[in-house]
Length: 69
Image (tube, rainbow, N blue to C red):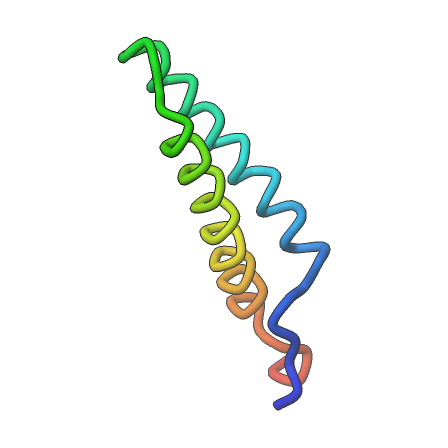
């Protein structure tokens, strides 16, 4: 029951993809509306980090532990 709650290698990969998606979304908003507030930009980036953490846990625990095999 001593499983980690942060796996750096999985988190880095997940964070990279999440930030790419977030930046593409921000660029899309800029192209559509022409501007974005600083608060929206920082909120999007902070949310991307939180989502990346949740997804990295989801990926890690969906693989199953070595004891299950």
